[in-house]
Every structure is written in C-alpha cells, then in structure tokens.
Length: 212
Image: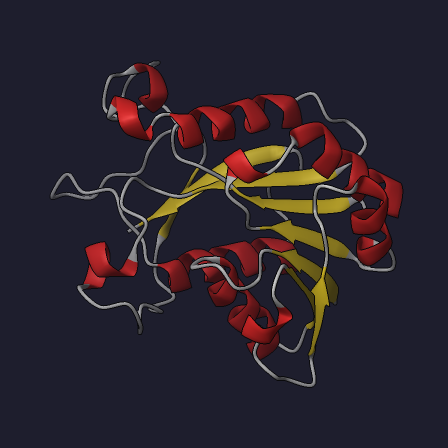
C-alpha cells in the first residue's frame, strides 16, 4: 500500500515506519526534519507544516491510508481531520492515548479516575478530546489505537530496542491488564498491531487497544 505516516521519526512513529517498510509498503514519511528519516527505497521523506491544511492535504493526496503519530498537544483535530478529508484519503489511523479507556471492570475512564498526575494531564486531555471528535466523524474510515498505561520500551523491557515479540492481546474500550496487574506493551508490538489493522481492518470507526 501507499501510506502517509505523519510523525515518522518519533518514538512510536519510527517503529511504525520500520514495520511498514518491512512488510513492503511504500511510505511517505511526513516530518519536520527529513535528515532524521532513514534512507530506504520504500520511503519518501517529506518536510511538511502539519498546521497548514492545504500543504498537508497536498502531501497526503494519492495515498491509500494515513497514519498519525503526533502528540495531541501539537495538533488541531479539525485541521488534521480536514486535511485528510481534503486529500481524498478515507482510511485514517491514529496513535491514540490510554486516558479515554475505562479502568478494568468499571465505567470510569482513566482520565477521570485520579490515576494520572495533574502535571501530566494536558496531553491525555487533548487525546481524549481528539477521540471524542473522531467519534463524530462519518466520512473517514478512522481507527484510534489506544496503548496501555506503560508504553515505553525502557519501562517494559529495560532497553530501548528489541521489543518485537508479535504476541499481545487486543481489547476494545477497557484497559488491558495482565495477571501481575501491569498494563504494558512495547513500541514494536504496538506497531505490529497498527499495521495489522491497516492491512486487515477490523475496527473501522472504532477504538481498540492492545497489551500483554
């Protein structure tokens, strides 16, 4: 497939980029600094101002899908969704947040349960708002993939690299927790789940989550 990946050099984005290339997809890596994009015949590096709807939609045009891997505080939901729609791309996948997931066995969202320290709330709050906006979107075939609470290779494996196991669980709107009470996944396995959904869509206009 021809895929546009926004934020292709961030911690999550570069793992998604690698997973896409490893599976043979053609990727337009949309970033601020193209010097950070790896050289590969399947990658086209594009420096784009994602705040400019016209410029971004032009870069997205002609692709079969768009994946967004950008911190929510750095993007405007209306502009981003508008750019994807203007580009004529229907499939839109988003690296989501965990805050809007429900705590296991409850009807309380994590963001409302007092589990997130106040100083870290701005980004989860923005992510939850983005998800709420997506739920109103009827034109795009969107998917919002929420990670678990621990979403860092250092936290999960004690090392930054080498986190691809290919084995994880899939859930919907409730945080996934293992038998030890941990909620976690590596960047690499999250990328596997994202590209699996791209290739074989199972959650059109839905949110889902993953975890060990």
